[in-house]
Structure formats: C-alpha cells, structure tokens
Length: 496
Image (cartoon, rainbow, N blue to C red):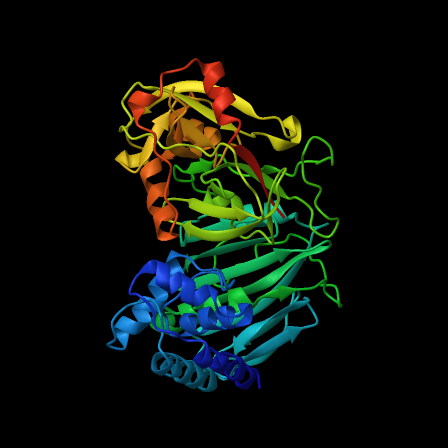
C-alpha cells in the first residue's frame, strides 16, 4: 500500500537527523542535507499532522521551519526546527496512524486523466458524472468530484474567472492562479470547498472537494494533501461536452451574479515568456523547459547571490538568470514577497550596496528592471521618480509607495537612491481596472517596493551579509550615472 512505501522512505530520515543550533539557519542546514524525496515526504507528513499547509516541494522556507517548530512545540519539545531521532519517530508514527485510519491511497481516474491521494475509508464511489467521477461519505458531509473541461468549450482563463467569482451565497476566501494550475477555495451555501485544476493541451482537469464545517479540522488537511499530490495527464476517455456549461463548483451552489471584486494589488508580475536568442549573453532554455514568465533581480554578493520577489520564482519548475544560466533557490520570505537565488560558479564585480539612511518622503529614486519581456526582449529599462509615501496599502509600514513607473516584469528589481544604494525591492502596483471600477479614476504611477531591511533579514538568515557603504562616502549622482551603476548588478530572472 502507498502508506507502507511512504513509511519505508520516511524512516530513512532517522539516519539523517543530527542535532543543531536552535535557530532558522541550523534548521535550514539540517533540512537541505536530506535527500529530495525525504524532504518532500517530511512536508507531506507535516500536512497530515496539521502543521504545514503549503507546497510539498522539498524546498526549505519560513513555512517549513515554522511547521517543524510547531510540531516540536506541540509534542512538548524545544522548538529548534531540527528533529531528533525520537521526534522523527513520533512524526512517522502519527502520520502512519492517520493514513491507516483514513485509508489514504492513490486514485487514478482514467476518465479525466487525474491522479491524486484520497481518503478511501471516508468516501465511497457513487458513479460517473458528465465530466468525471463522484464520491461521497456515508453521511453526506463530504463530496469529491473529478472533472475535465475541454479547452475548446471553456478556456483555462475563463474557467478560472467563473470559479473565482463570488456570489450571494458563495464566498471565495483564497485563490492562486498560475500558468499551469489554479486553486479556488471558500464557502458555498454553508459548506467549505477546495478546487484545484491543471491546464493541459486539450482540457482543464482536476478535482473539487466539499465538506460540512463540522469536518473542517480534518478535511482542510486532506484538501492540502490531495492538492499537492495531484498529477494530470490528458484524459484517455474524453469527457462529454454539454450545452450551457455551468461551473464545476461543489454541488449546492447558485449560478448567478458577479459581485464587484475587492481592491487588490497586482504584482508587477512576471512578464510573459521572452523569445531568447543565444547572442548578447542571454541564456537559451532547452526545448523541454521553455520560459513561461520573467521578472527582475539583482546581485547582492560577489559570489552570485541574487535577490528577487518570491512571486517571480513561485511554482517554477526551474529558474534561470539571463547571462548566468540556471539558479538555485536558497530561501524565501513569503510574507514580504522576497527570495534569494544562487547562480553557479559566478564571480560578480559589482553587487548592489545597501543604503544606511532611512528613506525620506519625497526622496528621488530610480527603478531598474526588465518590464514587458515579450515587447522589450532583454533590454534593461530605467525610470525615475520619488517616494510618495513611507507606507504601502492600508498604511503598511513595511513598504514604500513610489511614483517611478513599473510594468509586469519589473517585479524583483532594485529601488535605488540617487547615490545608487538600495532602498527597496519593487513588488507591485495598483491594479488599473479594479481601481477604476471602484473609484472611477485610473491610478497614476501608484507603485510599491518592500523596504530593503526585510531583504537584509532574509540574507542574514541565510548567513549572507549585505554590503553597506557609508552614505557620506557616496556622492549623489545624475539619473544616467545611477543607471550605469545599477545595470552592473541588475539581471533578468526567468521562470521555466
């Protein structure tokens, strides 16, 4: 059975556990020393113990550290983020008991082409539907459906917009939209629901899980496990189209009216894929790993460490830095939307230097980056502006509001002062369409950057020390001179 194989692999962790310092850095070193399959299985186990609710990708980050520490704390141990042999044995035992009790095994649905882990002892198969298969618990409190919607009938984007739309009796509490999958979850007529689908060449396929609130404690864990285990192939038996398609949301849902979307911040997000050439120092992705989006970044060390936004590299199969080749993700701060990468065997002549002085209201700033990759190719752009506010949306003191124009693809680029020193990392801009819908006016250069102090904290958690040059030793320069300084450290980051 699947859980037996899991325990065999997970038990190998017992041989790899070593004691360490009670801090984030030692937890990272311990975790990353494990084999990749061990790291993934450890995250899956922490999902089932209700300590971890994120992507099981084997990558260490703040959520993994917090999950390890929470498990230790819940068991009465000191929260170090490094599990001892005894603690790992407890985690293995608790995971095995839950998998056995729920009957968690793999389901391969030939009707829709989806495969995922499901709690077989909780659900019984009801039969086929027009778009997949259906399971239900004996008391009707839990329902599961697989689905496959042909792209010729409803596009991937249209399906997402339909499912992410709130209605009078249907509230959406979480969404994430990527090039190859999306998730929508919330509450529909008093029932919780979680839906994840993947885009394929011919159809959008996945599953929808719904449950009554009294089952929430266990079902929210199961939903995350099912989501992380989902694999989609093209359906071997095509789902029959039906006229007048209504959204495959959990059953019990109305089909009416779009309500106005709440105000949101749009990341100055990864730009669409760039048609790279091999000339000019750019990197040529292999045919099996096409570039699907790009953003900006900048070197923060002489050894090839690169800072960017977390959303630029989130859910990428691989990451590259143009002109330097593949990059390895070292650490992230999801709360502040930051990430640190490392390119291989690179020696950098001019990493960015960090400003010592606090940013000032009205201060002149310069933004560098690679916006609108499809249109601009690999051309670096430079824009000037000033600090319009010392806080972000809702008075968030972690961010700065700037007037320097940014576009999709600017995400992760440096915000420099007129000395060429780092003040922040470009993160987002106000969504034009939503702002116009709510206020009747288009925003004029309302853009945001996270303060550089948060990047400093992330770097130090990775045992990296930012370069500081005293402000009095750096004269203020013209925009052109700052551009000359910044272009030496600013790079384009590609997501494959």
